Length: 350
Image 1 (spheres, rainbow, N blue to C red):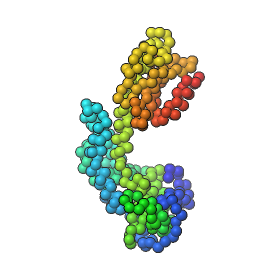
Image 2: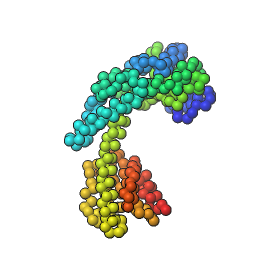
Image 3: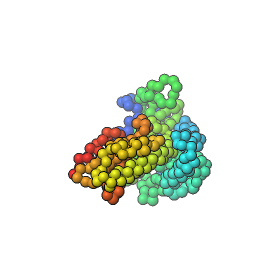
Image 4: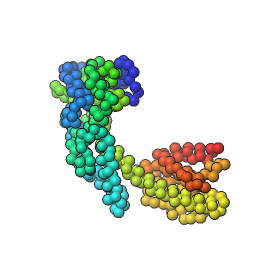
């Protein structure tokens, strides 16, 4: 969905490539195809110009239920994340986390329709508001450059009703079965495109997937994710940033020690443990690697911070620094292989 839609045919082909069932469709009788077009059209209009409630109400009740469930669980979600921090740090981090959540909400609502100014305002939002922020409805509607795109006439360009075997998620019974699907696509003369996929329930259609591109903005619901948790990635990022800050503090201390040793002895240290206990540079989440790396033909070193628990997904940090000036750069690597490759390049660079 990230490639530009250059022509009507290319746009239709792009949307058609989105796979929902993993099986070749067999055409089948289902709810009326015009009802499918009406359902998809209402969803499109809600995204482009409707309220948060109008959009949310186009989703089936079970998706709305999951959105409501997430909204109710936000306070508990935050406290669960804070449980991993030292008790004396929790109030401080709770405040920072709440401020970041407010900032994220405001960035997702550039026109300020929801009036979010404090974290209490976040807790007062409806599930529909949170979903609108998450999927990008408010950003799309606030984009003045896309006003003509939003208001353009949209044309139906494909329609299909079919049966396919599928794994049925969120059930306690059988996970596999045959269902009736409807897929419909729209485009406008700007070559913006939308595809909506629905599943038949009795004589009505329920939305399970949609993908909308307007200009360079993509909005989509993926039934593998369903109603996403818009705050979870933010919380994860804030926790990761907080923990990595400890690693950077340890690296800074190890750098300062190495510079003192270099000034005193005239040569950079090869190991930190040659002159100091290594646990001096160990924290709750990170510890500094003993080896001090050197760039050939340059008065420049590197030191690594390793996660205390390699299964923690905190990554590996490196500080590159000049011995004379102390000028430093921090780099983080998500995998040990990426770290090793960077260190090899550093030690062999001319």
